[in-house]
Image (cartoon, rainbow, N blue to C red; front, side):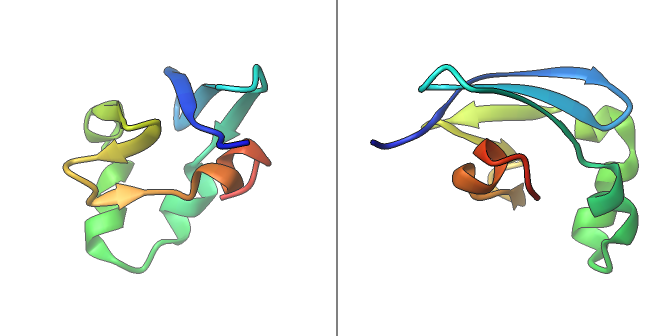
Length: 80
């Protein structure tokens, strides 16, 4: 079965609620990932206004034309 993200909603701080094509829902907190990032292209998403500007494209969550994205299966499992 191919899993995709059907919907993603910003909740608060750096948390996003995901709803996947198989009905699984996950709340994922990206704060540790972002604060630990070394790459300035990733670190800039500590700006909450930028962080909130994600989109769902072809069942995947992306920021700024794939500048930041994550493997769907990892998100499905609640890991980043």
